[in-house]
Image (cartoon, rainbow, N blue to C red; front, side, top):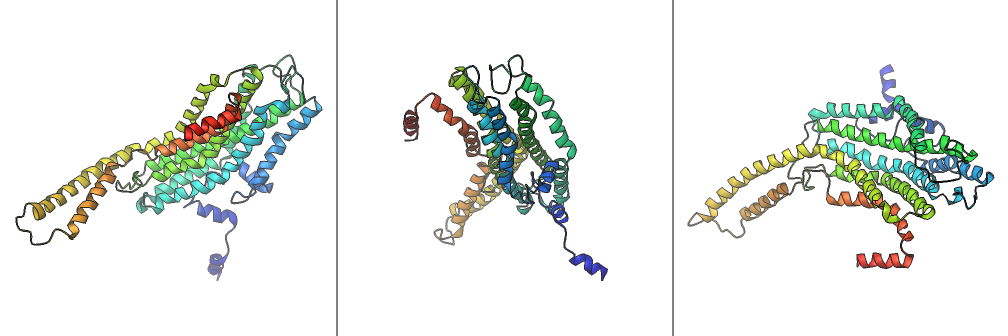
Amino acid sequence: MEATVRQITPKTPAESYAANEQEDFSLVLGGPLFQLLRKAHLQGDSLGLVHWRMVASILITWLPLLILSAVGNGFGSATHISFFRDIEVHVRFLVALPILLAAELVVHSRVRPLVRRFVEWRIVLPKDKPAFRNAIDSAVKIRNSIYVELALLVAVYSLGFWFWSARSDLGPNWYELPGGKWKLTLAGYWYVFVSLPAFQFILLRWYMRLFIWFRFLWQVNRIELNLLPTHPDRCGGLSFLGKSSYAYSPILVAQGAILAGIIANRVLYHGEKLVAFKLQVAGLIAFFLIAVLGPLLMFTPKMASARRKGLAEYGLFAQRYVESFDQKWVRQTSPTEELLGTGDIQSLADLGNSYQVVREMRVVPFALQDVSRLAIATAIPLAPLLLTMFSFEELITRVLKVVF
């Protein structure tokens, strides 16, 4: 009777979630901050209430700056940049930060099914499932570690302050008083000790999640994967890894928006030219393309090996079939069957198509299309800066000429 009761007793949400983690994995459903937001009723078990988290982030990081700046002459004067004219700070807290929070829902919904795909598509065979589960458990352990998030917090309030104090002097502004970088206004104290650290923590947390994801893939790559060179995705069955990079597009958009805000301040208030930042823009795009797609190159040796093996095996099979076909239909002086209508012709064509698929198999799990989409996602927030060089009508005309 007691055993029966144990069987029908429903699992708690925590127990159900832990059980699902054995076959499932999410980069974002866990960690001390996740649990804290759940207790504050700002986060559900499936990342609901994202709009409330976005609103809360603005209320904590941006609204106090608005109020304190207005109290402390936020409209400024001709000698310094006021809070209301500081494009960088508005983009950082009203655009980039909400996007980084909303990205959790995107990453959760798109990356989580990809983890199951390794098993569902038999890329990880049943005999290797224990090693696969170990990789998931290891990733979950890091994701949920309180020490990891404490380390991020320490980095924000140490290295973050050092980078801020070492920045180049951009002249008088709304958060500093004359006489030094640490002589701050009331709004400046909130900006330096609350708003910026909160933003940097969320950003560093995303970098940590990317590290966890690629560390998980590295452990999976150590397993003997069942890659099929005739898979129609031309990647041996791993093309979904390249498509998984789209889940990180919101993070790239946020990074592009931050750079756009910095450049906008420089161009509008310090007289610098937009073309002077072309190397920074190109460097940002290249860096994040490498950061997101570069680690996937760890699968290249296995994919190249599968391709070589496939070419050898299908080449041998093709040789035997073609030799048999040649003996039966070409060299035999009086065939006993009619060539037209026989299935041998169709089989020969199918064999040729299969061999062509093997030849076209890529040795990286992403395509040029994946690279271009991520590059566009990073560059989109920078597009409005072109209005500092061209009028809106001239910009539309130039775009139409390029398109058509």
